[in-house]
Image (cartoon, rainbow, N blue to C red; front, top):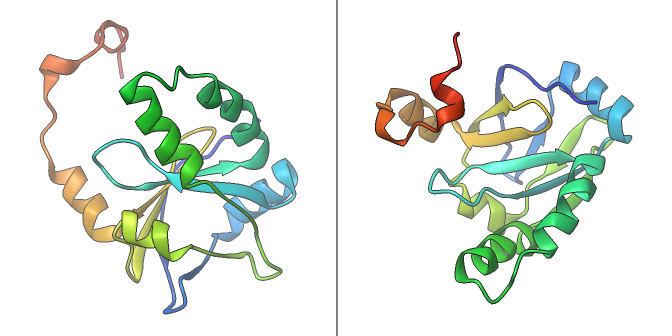
Length: 150
């Protein structure tokens, strides 16, 4: 079971390659042999989602099973499945981000890799810092969060 936590500042080179930090690379090697799936996040935040291959393979049938006659479900399928890019870390622990995904998430040189438990999020550093500065709207808080004590 994966347990991706924390935030990691990383750089992407001019060719769109980035090195996964050593600690995460070791976990990915043990968990999935370095095989991951990168895809677009379906919300307005425009980051990328990084799934270890087994996590993606568990999620994929659920996405495929959504009713494609529903506009919201179809959009989710197109974003997640249509942008899914299976890849494997090279011997230096690097991956090459496809140009379409770089463009979607507005990725430039400075990036943030954010742990989310079973997956990671890849953000442009600028957009991540802007998101951190946004105020939250408590009106949209689900009941499960109201009982959470931190």
